[in-house]
Structure formats: C-alpha cells, structure tokens
Image (cartoon, rainbow, N blue to C red; front, side, top):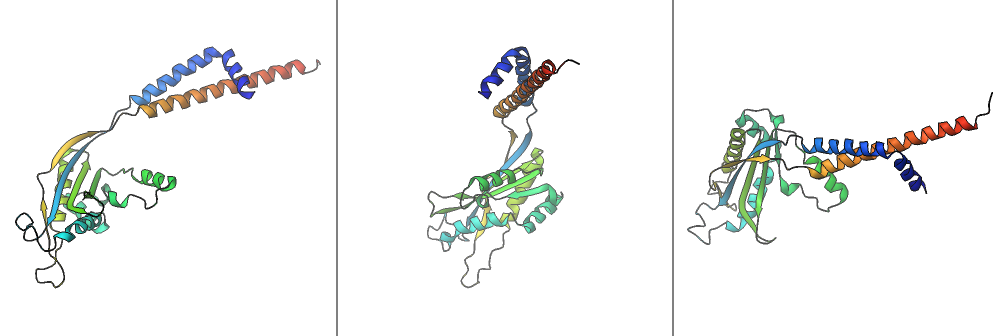
Length: 243
C-alpha cells in the first residue's frame, strides 16, 4: 500500500522525476568518463636448477626438491628484510614498495568476510608493487621450479628496474656449500629478458550505473519526502480552526 502511495506521489511530480533521471544520467556519465589510471608493468621469470643442469642430466640429484624450494623463495620475497633490500637497491623509500605473494593471499577456508578482507587488502596505494609467485604444476602434487615476477611502477624504467632488482635478489639466494652433508645445492637462473608493457585500468560501467541509480534513488526519495511534507502542511492548514 505504501508503495502505491509513493508511486502516486512520484507520478504527480513526474516532471521532477524526469529532471532526476537527467541528473542521474549526468552523474553516471561523469563517473564513466573519469580518467583511467595508467601504470607500467614489467615481468620476468627465474628457474631453479641443480648444479649439474637437468638439461644434461635427467636424473640430477636434488631435482625433486626444486619445486617446493621455488615456492619457499617466492614467499620469502615478501619479508621485511627483502623489501628493505629492494628499496635500497632501487634508491627509493621503503614505504613506497609493497611485495605481494599471491600464494599467501588465499584463505584456507573461503568465507564472505575473509574474501572481503583480502579484496580490501589488495588495494595498494604504494607506487611500486612487486608480485612474486611460484608457477603451479600440472597437478597439485607437482610444483614447477619457476618463479614469476611482476613489477608495477609509475613509469616503464621504474618497473623494469624493480623486476631486475627482484630477479637479481632471487639469483643470489643463499645456497649451501657443495660439501654440506644432507643438503642439496641449487642454482637460480633467469629465463629470458625482462618484458615491459603499459597497463590501463579497465572501464567501470557497473560503477557508473550504480552511481546513476543511487543518485536517482536519492532524488526520488527527496521528491517523495517534500511532497509528503507539503501535503501534511496543507492538511494541517485546512483542519486548523478559524481564529
């Protein structure tokens, strides 16, 4: 019943409603035409190998452990000590760099609250963002000894430099001496050159539509509220006894 009353009130003021639709459309177009952010992304990859490469020795000792070692090295890149070293090599403040590990950003038990928290934490205001992740294998039991590096920066030179610094840190990862008992030695090598490209934030049509609907909703609520107040005031004026 109340909905019918609201619709009748809006119909009586349909000219104002049409003006609200025009205003809401303008709001949506304004949001849709906002300048899209640009950033530069550089990517690189490194691979873990045995001292006597698997390319020449199919049964190299220690090859079965390279997968989980690559995953461990990727996770260690997000530590404070490594971030401080990256900032020193980049000659930028530590607070301007963030290192993201996708493997650690997946909740053990996905829930709406945990996923919402991860989405909020994924918003990184820092200008330099480094993402380091181990390449997944063909199955859950097999981990490839490959580490992917993705560096984002305001300019292409900064993104390339950040990717090179991260690659250099991984290549100089401490490995035990050859004569260490019970520990298998490994080496880290680059896979191809660093590749850089421009990244443009995607358009936001849903955000523009949502802004337009919210603006129209507030407008209609205002029209209905003012109409109700005016009607109540007129009714009180008619029922007031003459002096």
